[in-house]
Image (cartoon, rainbow, N blue to C red; front, side):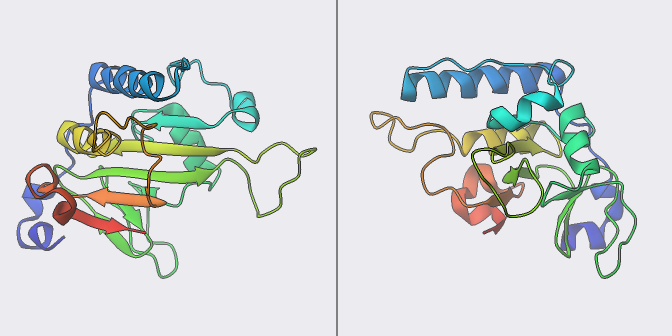
Length: 193
């Protein structure tokens, strides 16, 4: 961002969201899902998440590769559309510093950056009922605790009496929020599509 170019010290890596906030966010989103669909959601730590579960389940993953081993696994497998730093420059794509994320050539770094994006849990475009791997993950997190809170808030129903499952109504494939999202609302979205 321009603020990072003007003052790189202000954009140094922020402490990632705490495990306690990640767990509280998981419980909050599971309760929203329960109220919308009257079904229970199992909350697993990334240490208990086995890659063998992915072909048979859709997943909601909280955090980033630095705080969630399963997200790190998906990044290492090349299954995420967003790149998390630190990463070197790759061809035309710029380097991604520690604590930052990139979508295509755009790098987002600094405090208060939140994100929510979908990622297929398979390679390629083919799918058949006899071939597992047609599932999807929703990855929600932030560069710091405020970014995570903003990203989680995108799953809250806009009209509470009309409860719906979190992130299900008109949610694009990716949203990246900035530090002004809390008070600007959609005006604080840095990227979406």
